[in-house]
Amino acid sequence: MFSKLNLIVALSIFSFTSVLSQDSANYSANKTQKSNPDKTESNDYLENLFGLSININYGYTQFDGDIRQYDYFSSKQTGNSYQDSDFKELRSAYSFSLEKKIDDKFSVSIDYVNGEFAGLRRPNEYEGYETDTPYPDVFNAISAPNGQKFVTTFNEIDVLLNYDLNSNNPIFYLELPENISLIAKFGFGYNSFRSLRTNLYSDEYIYGYGYEDFTKNESDAVTESVIIYGAKIKYEIQEGLSLLVDYTVRNSMSDKWDSSIMDGGNGGDRFSLFSFGLACDLTYITSKD
Image 1: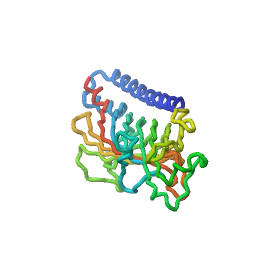
Image 2 (image 1 turned 180 degrees about the vertical axis):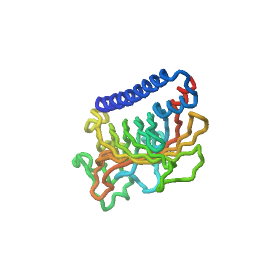
Image 3 (image 1 turned 45 degrees about the vertical axis):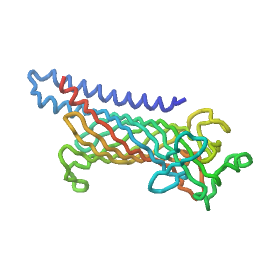
Image 4 (image 1 turned 135 degrees about the vertical axis):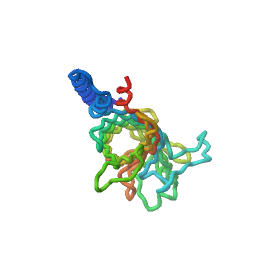
């Protein structure tokens, strides 16, 4: 079902593993050539070559597109008889990242992200807009005039370039404590998703991507290219272990994430992920052995 995504994940991991293996081999050869290496020099050499960390984050998503009630904060719908709990735009997601240090300024990372995002839009917000109704004869009575909501589940693989703004340069130099880093990032991703759009007040099916028409049965997932930018704060709490605060925006190359194409709407869809996490430096763990 996610064969293309799995292939990209496998190729990405293979590429990282190849680089890591080469770095380890170079380090071992260098260590063998030295009859009595100094421990500090050995650790510095290992850090330059190995330079790999694992990051794990968990947080909340906020969608921005055609189906969103407010521009600057999230919304929820209460009191519907069909739902056991409130329908909320804020949803959760987690990410797993392998990051390879290039030098003091740059690093590259491969991120895997899994979760969902959602949105709602009440009837008064559709005044003056034309919404895409794929089955007007059947669903006209339950489409936009009565409000809509959607939920999208997704898997994504990203390749990112990270830049440490603490590094000494005339443009971005910041005076921060030594154990705090402010890092900007930019990259591209491959998103595999299913999006289900339904009536806000009755939960009747309107339209979906990755679902069979007129039903909620799953079919083949839809794939989409993604442009990514964001920033994170890294706070080292002890050697080899850091806390992360991350804010990342993912921009779709189409208007399908909310299963809604609206004339006069927001156009391209995007969602943000605000998350907290931990970063574990494998260089430190390896040097301890």
